[in-house]
Image (cartoon, rainbow, N blue to C red; front, side, top):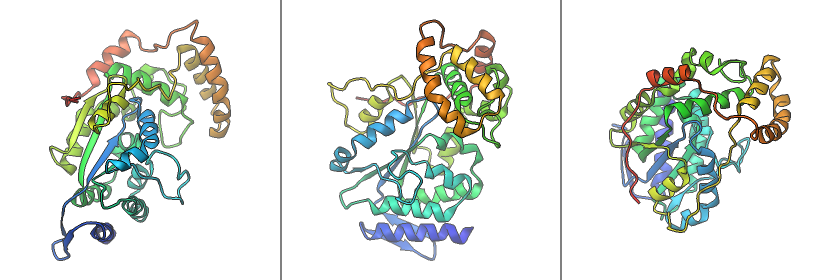
Length: 318
């Protein structure tokens, strides 16, 4: 594994050397270069990650003109045109170094001499963080030698976060290795499951990523609804005429949740559940007139507040 990690460092450093002044000591494995900034947007569930990715994808040309790269995926990937970078966590969960090398190499191949910043965005980075083997975290440490890594993460109010994430778990197809996806469970039942509860360890994620990338390399922000405006402000792209970004995903009401739980009870196959989702969305739109979107009772609320490990948020100056 160490040989593969060294191969990763050498290959990416060699590519970077072709577009900037890079010196590398093979003996010490140290890299000295004017590092380009690599922003890793670790989108936490239900904080507008899809909207951010759609915005960055739409603005790719404008970003390019400002020296910022939001890269395309490898053409060999399942969905090369997708604006997400799900390969990042998928390669790390399994420590698939060869694929990680190929994907990072593809990103570097899109860097031009005037590129000073690269942005990667994926919700799964936070979802799967606790599943990353130590060897994968070693890969991230090497990445931090090659780039000036800045990790951005947004956290919601814990009660609204848990409610939204619960709905997403109910909505997802079943996965054998996941105790929450596609299950017929209430919110209070899901709060008994360690895998679900670990997503409330905001501070743990920040602490661990700072140990890898550096104390000043990780910024936690408060999710306030329009994350696209916050991202555009951080990138220096916001204007006074910007309109609020429309939501990319709808919220499910309690009637739709009850329907989905009934469907989940029958262990429906993923492809069949996907066929049902357009119908369920139509039902959700109609039932919005008659029912509530809230599924959190007072007991669940108090449990969430006792379980969350909060962080101190950074400010976003306009």
